[in-house]
Length: 391
Image (cartoon, rainbow, N blue to C red; front, side, top):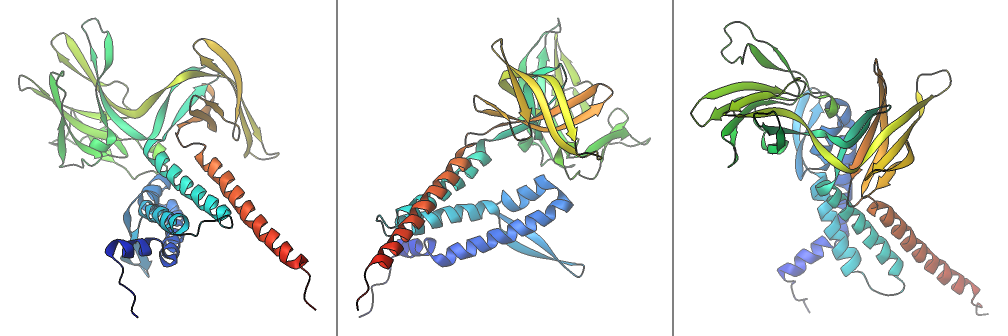
């Protein structure tokens, strides 16, 4: 008797819950992890992460004797989503429910929770640097990677208000030379056209007769740094006033003063910089201690003695490479240090992540599930072994 053919939803469920899909996904995850790790030495950590692990799909250039062959591959983001639904269908819905499988069920649910933690982190995590000299305090940290173009308004007395306009990097990082986009706000008397974005650039004096020069200068693109923190971005802007007048300028991360446009009694300062976030508390660096391995310049341990200031209340803390400060959802890590004529500077990494502790809870739950599963197998084995054997 022939079995009744499955419906389309049934076929889809069978596919999503299959062992074959799980093995295929895990094989591709192993492959892109290998390729992404190798690529870090050529394109840097950030670009490697974006290409291989944050993407839905990618093109990997396979080098065969100097010939590059483009190979399409699924990205880490797509593979993680498929793995989540594979575990949901195969290891949670399809699995036989009972006391014998409770340990396996707990472990698989915990792994799914860990995958969900990665998704939440990808969407909502912020991470940046807070460099401090001894005696210095701050309640702000700046992004390692995200830039913004911001416009501040100042009145005739030089008093400024909040940011009049903030443009995130995702709205202008695709504007190569030849591409332009105009930005405006209803309460701004100016419009701003942005073009010529360079991820890493210098501003140099233009040659005589260069029609693309702005006030005698031009943007010179340089090779991207492997560590994105070292890149210095630049863009060209054209500010359009209501009366039709236009002013061109170069915005560069290292410029000392913002470009300023006057409209009536007000002035508008325009600059490009790293994204900044404000902490609900301040950190003051009291003392920085660097320990080296004997006979070398290699760091053994960094220790920062700091004071956490919340609403005027001071609390002494110690931050080391493995012991961060946690408060109100923020985590302050010891990242690195620098030293110059102004003294020693401790560099902290500040992270806010709603799913910060989820991987830890997931690992604990996985361990509990596996312990339950193995104990049940052990009990069944001992029960069988202690039964009297028939003569």
